Image 1 (cartoon, rainbow, N blue to C red):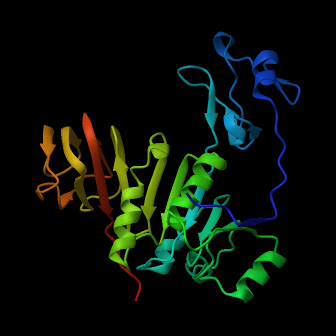
Image 2 (tube, rainbow, N blue to C red):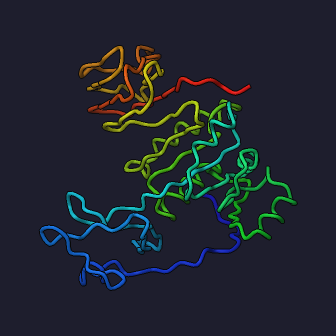
Length: 291
């Protein structure tokens, strides 16, 4: 297992015991009682920090749900890797105001090419220059350094940071595709990590997005977009599609066959539902690539 070598400058955090909020049904003096005595909706931007088990934390806001409980922070984390980016202006659109930006080692170069400054840089830093480290430290950017000899890739460590330690449940990964085939395959395989089961994690460079379907997912795009469905680690059973030119009706796809390649969206939305297995979805958007 990897050993964390150093971490420069921790963010200051304020932890509010969630039990006190649930008992008093008040936050910052305001009543939280809504319909049927449930918790009233708060602005998603009014976030609180809660401390779950084992010393990790997540960001949360109060919102109604089927259990009228606590939902995790709806902010997004954007992870930058050192892979290829087909079109820089298109990739810039992946990032939204308020996103938490993580540069994974050499992914710092892609982030700089797009004109962004990271909140965190993580990895063994073998692709980050000494001048960059000095500038980042001077700017107050958080640096998390690991040894070069370790059991995980820097991307896997970054996923653990944003999901398990920072509590994000919506993650976009830029620069995860292209370049070394072993790194690309490894990045795709990481989408199957158990800790991502209840998260929305997508490899997205603006031109195409790749994500894993565990039960049901909606795909937003345009008529004519290409959608490929690829079984991961075995047969996927009970596949039902809507909004695709070549429908599947409770059918199976096999990893050694290519039936799921190059389907086509008929409208602006499509859906894919499965009963068993893990199904990789590759959504290629129609667009004019900048020269």
